[in-house]
Amino acid sequence: MDGEITAEELQSTLEADDDVRIVDIRSSGAFERGHIPGSDNIPFEELPQRVEELDGENRIVTVCPLGKSSVQAARLIASYEGTSDTTVESLAGGLDGWEYALTESTDGGANAPF
Image 1 (tube, rainbow, N blue to C red):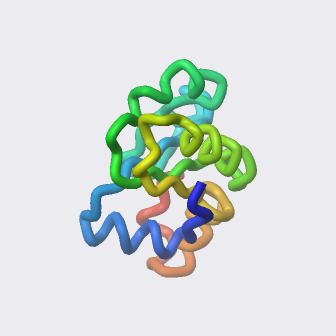
Image 2 (cartoon, rainbow, N blue to C red):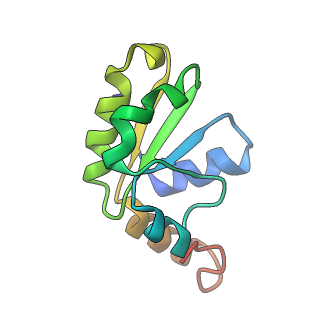
């Protein structure tokens, strides 16, 4: 795992259209209620069986509600041989941090996914 990325850094990365794959590890129900635009849902319990879907990615950011489980997910992904050349990060503060950062940086959080 290559560390954590802040919500502001991730937003800048997305705005720059940089090559990043966002992996939301929440349940499919939680994902459907709201998520970061462009993110993919791979629930944490499915990650060991589905990690090969991430082969060859340049950069992966894992996302969870508070930024704790996504650290574990990022470590699991980074340990997979198919991602040995991949930058793997966890979103610091999770989706709570993402929503807060967008609320602070936009007019009333209009871009917040929830």
